[in-house]
Image (cartoon, rainbow, N blue to C red; front, side, top):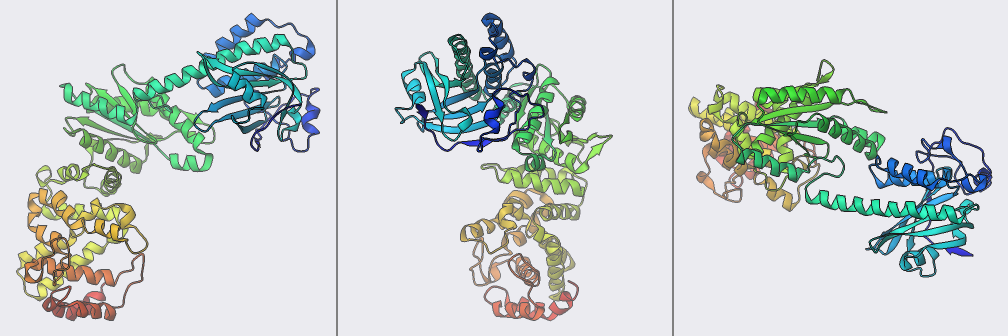
Length: 610
């Protein structure tokens, strides 16, 4: 008896609603280890034509069947679909009991095999190419067809010991695997015809691999068929830098894709992404370019298109997507943002950042008339809370991309010359942006400002200086915009490496944000030096004593006091007495002792208002 030795076989069941009784059914029902009789999409569309050719002695018209096969596989997008159709022909038209496709993994020296029986049960296994006496391995290595009287497949008893044929899949002297089919009623005519079909299968597999290789080289995303992120960026750069015309970006983000992946599996999520990509592709003009910008984000380049025209195109695409109805999911919803060069931005990264920002505002806005809201970056109200919250998300995502200097783009949107708002409005909005990112800072900046203002008044500073210190206190942590969220939200103490990153926030706040806004330049000394220590051990400049600006010394005490009396992820809030005790112990070491002496007097009255 010939045998196939493979690794342990794993079987899976698929739902089958209608089955036919046949002479072969008892083999499945009587086998104690076989899965229950089921079928799957391999049978879909072919069950009504099922004919056991050998058993019923029906004359086969090879030309007609081959023509039918070639015509059908033209519409198949994947090798799996082609294999499913070939399996249906082998079972329903040629009378085989099972088929097996084994494709070589040359790097790990084995055949990956998938076996499908006549009712659609699917089994997978691996066959080592070191098994020289295995007839399948022999056929693969020798590149010759083998007719076997008995084939034994481990752990699949209902298709064991069945006569069969092993056909190597060869194309241009390259053997890529084997195709196996077995049947008690097999005959030479059917075997020869199956060999013709499998030769065609080998050609399709080789061509598909070549297409994938070419697609990768020309920046085509294999899931959606759209341009890859890299290809999209290259084409956008070309449109902006080499053509003297407006260019609009329409960015589309699929809503709830994480929930879909979690509840229905990533295959369902991929299906949704493919459908959205297809809707986008069908509604593009010849000059437009669509690309897969991120995992579930699709972006479109619209050359020679202004903001108004881009909005109309986005509306039509939005409508087309909203009419899609997916099993288990329902109607698809997306968030859409638009930005236009040079109206909204004259830099490529700024243009894309504004489109992302608009997408997030679209998501927070929800739906209008049953369709997703479309947000145009040119019309964004940058000062409202939804905009600030989404800004923090964009900043976080951009900061996690190596080499991305997001701060310059953000600062340009905040620059005082671009707005009629006064200094307080700018300070409040910047504080709101960081509070949207770091939960701890919600309320922290205002509390520190209140404490610092009280201490500044206690030592009789001029009213203008008190206001400067108060504003500096509100923005003392603005540099945390540039700190990864994983560090800001960490539930325990920071590691040495994380602490070094955290210590960069004063310099980020100054160099990337405040310094570029003319009306806030007076706040630079406070923001830069509020973590300096009286004895010179602080950061970032390690200055000491009265070298530390007075405003920074005041904010340092206010900042430390509020941190101590607040709950933190890694400890509970300290009592008032404990906080005062720590301030006294650090006087002359970490903090200005004269300022500490003044502050502990007013601390109880401030504490009661927390």
